[in-house]
Image 1: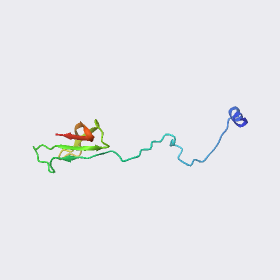
Image 2: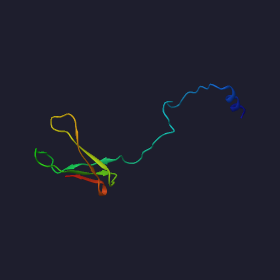
Image 3: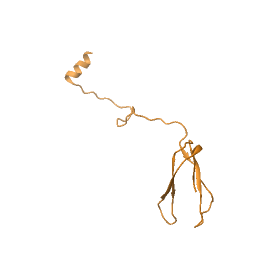
Image 4: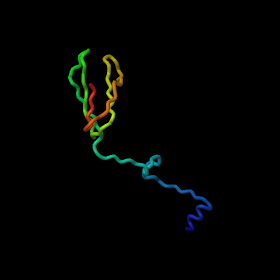
Length: 98
């Protein structure tokens, strides 16, 4: 390899136009296929009345046991949400908070 031997001895400068942006790394890609994960939710009542209990539950997809579902609420008169609880999924990805 005479050309490589010369490059190693004297050095070289090569200029090329990139087809893709040079700041990306196309060798490190992740390809995700399939439906995105989702969480369904339901409540024991459609209207919340102060002082009455509400039970919430649902299921995650894809169904898995032991996934964590975080339950958040927005108190009346506030702009931000507060975390109420973390629950674990059970059989068929079902979760429930009494």
